[in-house]
Length: 169
Figure 1 (spheres, rainbow, N blue to C red):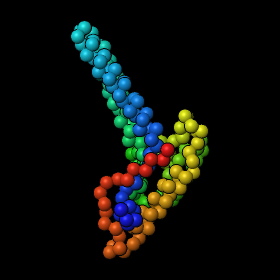
Figure 2 (cartoon, rainbow, N blue to C red):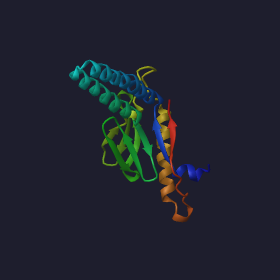
Figure 3 (tube, rainbow, N blue to C red):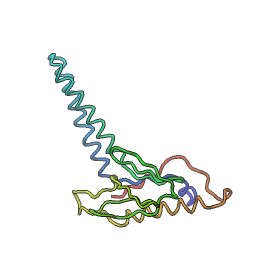
Figure 4 (cartoon, rainbow, N blue to C red):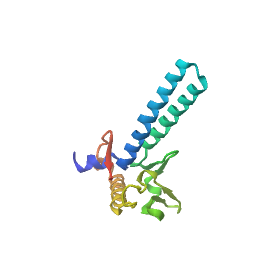
C-alpha cells in the first residue's frame, strides 16, 4: 500500500482493552440472560423470563457500545464515538487533539469547545495514564488528511475502501 492510498483511508483509533471489555460483558451476561429465560419459561415463572430478557438486552447494548468506542479520522471529518453518542466534526473545525485533565484525550474545536474521547480514556489496569504518543498519532493522521485534501484533484490518492484499525495499547 502506498502512502497516498494509506492517507486516503479512514484510520480508527481505539484501545484494545475496550474491545475485550465489550466481549467480557456481551458473552457471559448475554448467555446468562438467555439461560435464565429458558429455565424460567419451562417453570412458568414469567416475570423472571422478562428479567432474563432485560439482562440479555442490557448486556447486548453495553457490549456493543464498548465494542464501537473509537476515534476515526477520515478524509473529510473526525468522528468521536462515545458510549451514548457519535459526533462528527469537519477537519476544518478541529483545532487540536490534547491530553486534558485526569489524563483524558480531548478533541479541541476551533470555537473553543472540547469533546472527550471515551475510547482513549486511561485504564485502571495499567498506570492510569494515556501516553502522549497516542495523541501524536491522532494529530499526525489529522495532518495527513488535511494535506491530502489541499492537493489538487489530479494529485489526490484515489479513495481506498475500508478503515485501517490502529490499536493504541
